[in-house]
Amino acid sequence: MDTVEFIQIRRFILKLGKMLHKYGSPSFRLEAYLTEIATHLGVHASFISTPTSLTMVLWSDGHEDEYNHSARMEPGELDMNSLSRTDELASTLLSGDITLAEADIHLDEIDVMPSPYGKTLTGGAFGLSTSAFAMLMGAGWSEIFYSGLLGSMVYFWTLWALNSKRVKLMLEPVASFCVGFGACAINHYSSSGFNIWLIILSSLIILVPGLSLTMGLAEISSRNMVSGTARVMDATMQLFKLYFGAFLGVSLGYQLFGQQELALAETLPFWVNWLGVLLLSIGLVAIFRTRLKHVLWAITSTFIAYGVSTWSSAYLENGLGAFVGAFALGVFANIFSRIANAPSSIVAMHGLIVLVPGSKTYIGLNSYISGQDIIKTEHIGQETFLILMSLLAGLIFANVVMPTRKSL
Image (cartoon, rainbow, N blue to C red; front, side, top):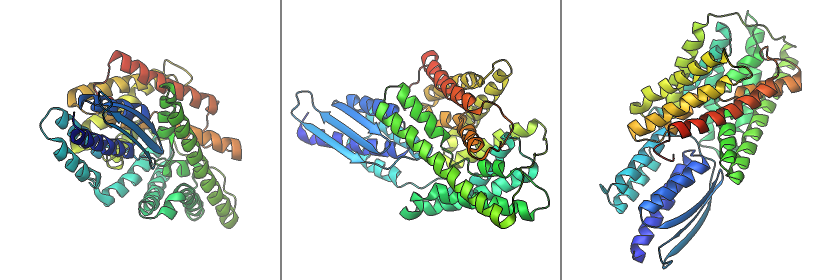
């Protein structure tokens, strides 16, 4: 391998690694995937990925050429469209259908590609997903409506944060403050009372870092200690910021509108939960920027995760139904990876949303600080811990039974 070819290869791997990091790939998957790519391209490599950095070392067989690179990175956001296209491009390169120079140009095109659903549809997806989550939490119709309304307001702040570093730094507390204060104002001026904290949780569910918490623990279980610990602590701080902003907004709302008791939601038929799963899965398609050819797979994964976990919960106690749900989801995602020749995370992330205990962590935090229960539940902290462990175990068992085709 001559020096010119080595430079082209390491330039491509560096750009590929930064893009996959940007699209929210877990560290253990990113490192394994880049190692496979480097091996196929004929170079030796070592990678270290954390939520805020990426380090790589590349060298040729005889160490005639060596390259060291370390970069400070921003934490990635899930973008299934770009992730899928980047993986396709890498596969096309390895099959010999395009040259390294052409692949490098295509990477630049993918990197600047906007969301395929646009801002309007994504904003509607925020409102739809928050209303759907309220359905899954057993909310009444008025609470479902106002959760979607306040969820759309959260999207406004999220959109502003994309264009302002100052807003991005305070996104969680400011968005949750506005939601908390808005919920108090709506409850004061509306004719029917509702559960304020349930509306707040549903409206903020897109920002609640349950998925990040699960990914962090998965990284720790795979012995990526630095990355996993950093991701868990980041998720914990996001949760604290969300709760502080909501608590401050509700406190100000109580001062202006008076103390408001939590009202019990009306009991809705069980089929509303399945409607909520459908609407949530549709909303996540735009939020995660899932490609149209993967939409049916993604929606199916959500139903499998929720349906299997709900069915098994009737026979298993203490949140162990999440283990069966995660196992079924992992097997389905790996089957998708083999059939579609795409990363399993494209559909797995959708199903994990209905399984991750981020909402339960928020409920437990509220019960501990305010002494008020958002929903009637016992041993919330113990159940949250068991669900987290069940999710990790289920995904690990699924990878043993049905190994994934790709590292991503």
